Amino acid sequence: MIAQQDRTIIAAIYARTSSPNQRFNYSIEGQVNECWDYCEDRKWIVKYVFVDESQRAKTTERPRFQMMLERGRAREFQVIVFWKLDRFCRSLRDLVNLERDFGQWGVQLCSVTEFIDTSSAVGRFNYRNLASVAELESEIIGERSRLGLYGLAREHKWPNAHPPLGYEKREDGTLALNKKEVSIVRRIFKTYVSEKSMPQLAFKLNARGILTKKGGRWNARGVRDILINPIYVGKYRVAGVEEQLEEYRVVGDEIFHRAHQTLRRYKTSENNRPAMHEVRRSAKINGVLNKYREFLGRDLPVLTKEQRDINE
Image 1: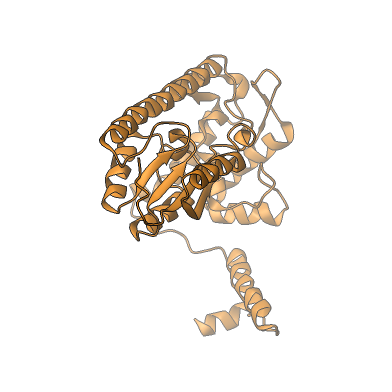
Image 2: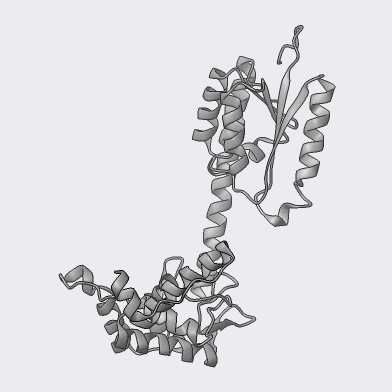
């Protein structure tokens, strides 16, 4: 056990949920309250409460967790209290490394619901055993998820609630073509093969008021995601399952192949990329000027092509 001696023990509380669905099961409020009661019973002074919501514990790359590490390294508290080890971390390697680092900083770890107290040899032994169990549980959950995803793929179902542009998800989980969106996809392939510019294509789509699947504006990355997706020629690839499904086809093999050749043309040749299209270039320059107008609160002139040529 952590010795109280005659000094005040400064504590930090850490709480985490891995998804919004855990709001009521492992709620942040419930975790913090139990940890706070635990500290008060031992007359520890709580200085910090670090909370990560909807954050996975497979790595330590969590915003508040990293902040806690910084405070621990600065020796601003002597003990970290958490509700359960799997709320703190799941990776065995990370848990062992954290125990070593915190030990060097004079910081000990305590779990409210488990016998974890790294100030003693028995506590450290138990900490590592529980860390192994937490990692095993995480791996089992991952395996079950992969098996479930593979089962969906065997039935040609889409694995999430967001099918690609051109499709809508049926009640049974399979995909159906969305005629309106299919016409957009075909326009993207046809226009790209003709104009050979993803930024220019995105500019034209936005100019015509055509939105992305999520209702946003287009950019070059969004156009590229359409052009490289094999689902548009009926190639279903999910969770290791690869099958040709003609009912999912949107474009022909020839135009898909031509689009891919166009995408790769600068990797396979010494051709220079074409200059930015004049219409899009003008819009970009005047867009920058509009930002300056907003910032300065006064009008700036819209440059003509001749003025831009002189300034360049």
